[in-house]
Image (cartoon, rainbow, N blue to C red):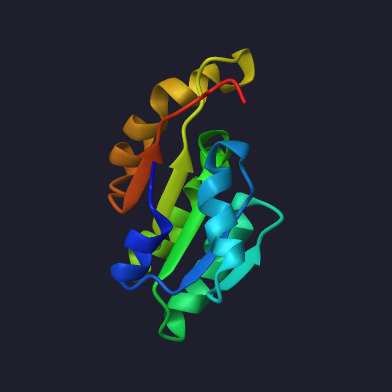
Length: 128
């Protein structure tokens, strides 16, 4: 599990993302804090919001479920990587249910393939 406090200690001061029950304790810690937080309607939007926050001096974190990785490949490869803006991705890993199986098997490899290294995959109860 990723600890919200440890990210604050690392200087992260802006959070956005798409809610995921597998990250509920992490997200609840964000909501209960005074840190700026915006819930996004989809993962690509969260990346755009995080990049905007980075451009005004914030250190941003995007949380998402690994099934949403497909929605951020283009924003990562056409915006983040070329502009050298790399928000931290906190990714809830799922793989046991049929709708999560494929992405659950390739999530880490997919990010490595595009050369994105600033992420944490949070493994846990995949059946929630």
